[in-house]
Length: 114
Image 1 (cartoon, rainbow, N blue to C red):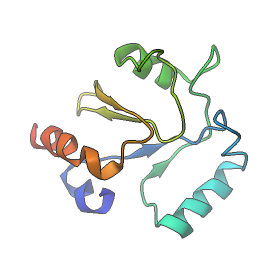
Image 2: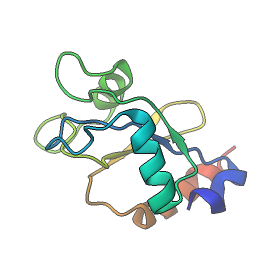
Image 3: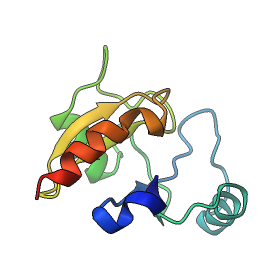
Image 4: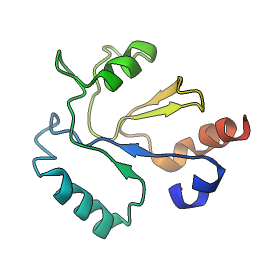
């Protein structure tokens, strides 16, 4: 998806987090190497952050304040997704179980707005 839509303005930003079952215990460089070699990831990978709790990163505090989750605002698990428009405003929040291909229609709709 990233390769196909980056020319239209899509940016995927990934933030590793070790708050979910200790799934990301490695250093950022090891995580980036793993996802690049195993999955061919070419999008932006950032430093490891916390997404829940009082020491959550400000970005996730902002996202969660704008788009509420089911039952609580906490991020439920790795691979939770947020769709952000060109002006930096959160538009939609997706559960960790939502497949990337299931949100292509929403992404295309936003990319067509200029």
